[in-house]
Length: 362
Image (tube, rainbow, N blue to C red; front, side, top):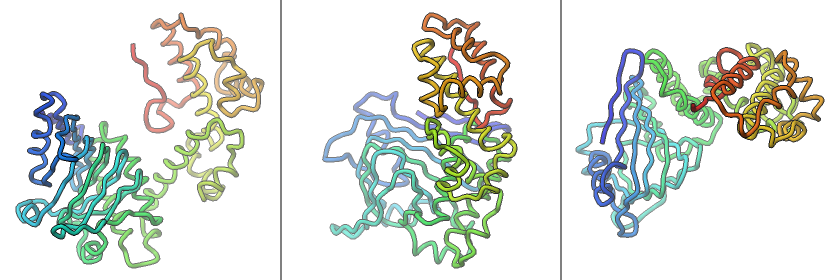
């Protein structure tokens, strides 16, 4: 079944899934949906009954797609290419499972590309090929060829390529950054995102050593900040997390790091707020089952005294008083409101990461 949403305040969205169909009908529905793009066949001669789903966001010039499928063999034959109306390149990012593409040469097969999780690969809808998908989650971004002008002669020679260079890494990071924002993205923002991603792709295929320097500085700053935030959130429990450690690991100067997090009150203030947010989340989940010394150790504080001093910098109430309020028996609505207020007191009104710091199910 399909679902379409489009308003003046939201980009056009479409979803298709076969999960509501009888098990025996699912593969045929998936095959019918894919027929204009590729021919698909069950793996190992079987008949997959797993669910398939695809979500599509139209940003104007480009289209983002999230796909989940249980696996199949696929082929794009010369006939498929001739009858298809699309003339697009596409960026492909494997998020789970596997995907391998082979050349289309009768019975002979030459491996052209194997998806690397989290790494963008560059492909063309004009290529004939075949391949195998297994229990696959992926992101795809479709880019009309006419956006790239003379560069298409270079790009056509580099299809089925994993983008592993510096600019390719920026493209991968930018795609991951964008995809989390798609459900609430406005058409105007979507148009800007489209232009920025196209410029990144152009830079990747530019025949110049200046190609990274030619990228819009705002894009570089956005991607760099997102990468640093991800690194920090993955290392909150590391007591060695410091300005020097972040600069060394992320390859950024101190001055640049300070500029990036100036709006957050400084990089270490950002780290402190993320740690305290994580502490409060643990208190919500486990109440008094987690002691303050345990929480201090888990989230990178030297000891309980540092945890208590740090919390007092952000809130007028001592954290041991907060700790007393949380226990397994204490999950009523009034107490959830209290936690919300505690989180708000240590976080900016807008989320630190562009998404709410915590959401509650009542």
